[in-house]
Structure formats: structure tokens, C-alpha cells
Length: 118
Image 1 (cartoon, rainbow, N blue to C red):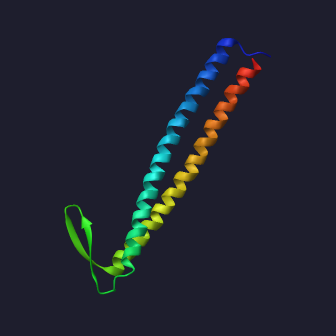
Image 2: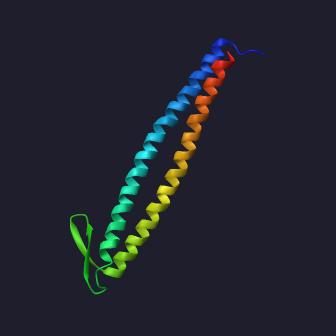
Image 3: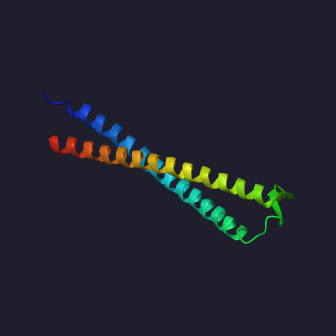
């Protein structure tokens, strides 16, 4: 049973569209992951700098155009929580990236199979 040329062309076009969309999403996921990793490094650097501060030191957190005074322990907890949240987001983006790369690879393989089968 042979597939007509028009149907085959339409199917190849649909798969190419899916592959292009997956490629675009891959780029977006990579840039988001890079931004999250950069933010994560900055938070870790801030935590490292805060290690040398005594518990009774005065710390400030930027909120818009002003600064709020916070206890060092509270600021550390906040930064630890932020680090954990960023790590979770990076992990989710990594699994999404893996899914998108697999989708793109499969789309390309299907196109090649269809063109070879012609």
C-alpha cells in the first residue's frame, strides 16, 4: 500500500513544522536555563559572602527603590529558599529540554524515513 505523493508531502510539511517549533522551543529553554543558572550562581555568591558576617550584623534587602533591614539569619533563610527554588526550576527546564531535543530528533528521523521510503 503506497501513500500518494500529495499526502506524503503534506505529512512531511507537518513534521517539518513540528521540528521547527521544537527547535525554537529548545533555544528558548536553553536561554531560560542559562539565566536561571546565572541567578543561582549570584545567590550562592551572596550566601558565601554572608558566611563571614556575624549574626548580629545589619543586613539590608533591596525592595524596589528602597532597602529593608533584615536579620542576617532571615536573609540567609530567604537566600537558601531561593537557591532551592532555582535548582528546582533548572531541573524542570533540563527535563523539558531533554523532551524537546528528543521530539526534534524523532521528527528529523521520521522525515528521513519517509524520504528514503519514497
